[in-house]
Amino acid sequence: QVQLVESGGGLVQPGSSLRLSCAASGGSLSRYDTAWFRQAPGKEREYVASIRRPIGGNRSYYADFAKGRFTISRDNGKNTVYLHMDNLQPEDTALYYCAADASLILSSIRMSNQYDYWGQGTQVTVSS
Image 1 (cartoon, rainbow, N blue to C red):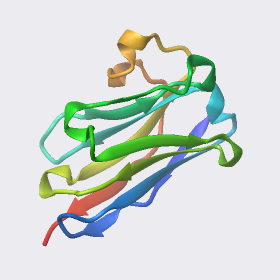
Image 2 (image 1 turned 30 degrees about the vertical axis):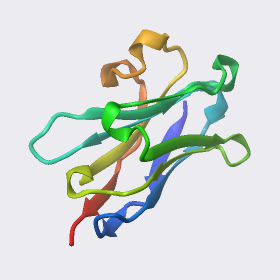
Image 3 (image 1 turned 90 degrees about the vertical axis):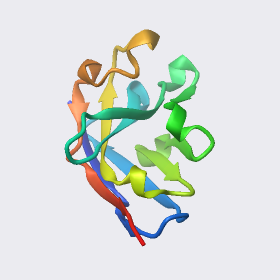
Image 4 (image 1 turned 120 degrees about the horizontal axis):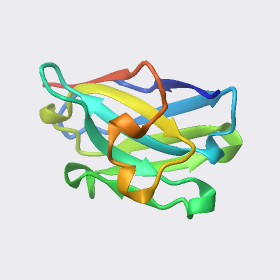
């Protein structure tokens, strides 16, 4: 059973960049489809981006708001998935979660309730 730990969040100014990390233990993250979700206060958890397992081609997918600004990637040697975020804006302020699942179908990758494993989240605050 894989355990996920997020890191890399913080308080940044608008226009800044951050790289979030999702480090796995207890299993190889290369066996899992992995995604980032976020949840702002008073709002529902929303999909940010996901990356398929290597056997699935390592293909990445993004929410519309993330396209062109966010990049998801994996480093199998470090058993870690990253979310690089550029040009952060106040509306990106949220608790960012990493999630993983070993048996997703493509149509489910944006659905938080389809992921079995979750980290505790890392806070990203964008404010001037």
